[in-house]
Amino acid sequence: MIEVIKYCIPALIVLLATWIVMYKLFANEQQKREWELKKAAQKEISPIRLRAYERLALMLERTQPEHLLLDLDIASMTVQQLQQRLLQTIRLEFDHNMSQQIYVSEQVWDEITNARSQMSGFVAAMALQLPEGSTSLDYAKTLLTAYKTNGETANEKALHALKAEAATLL
Image (cartoon, rainbow, N blue to C red):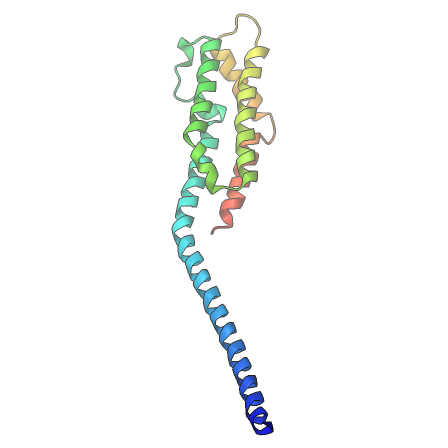
């Protein structure tokens, strides 16, 4: 019986050591496979995310007053019509790019939605501040002047946050 124990104990120790080595080897291989899958997925997702950042940056640029007013025939509109057109353009730009939120962080998306809300509020507030009988040209000048003297705007803050997040991919 002692002879059997003499052979079994070393065999069990070798078996246990082999099992531990094999377990660690398989665990490392599994981690390596998961890392390779993540790497492959990242190669596919990164270009899509960068395009989303580009689209959102373009939206933030397009919803600034100087860009909003660029292609409009301001002289033929009333203040009310111009205000409605600007608000509609802001809403359409945002709605068109809403799907991009899945590619940015929640903080960046919050900055973007805040920028849209503040720009809509700004457009409405400037229309209310105009004296009675003002023209759409007066309104456009008021918008541009007030926006430029407003300091760092919500659009600029959102654009900075967007650029900072996009830089993490590069």
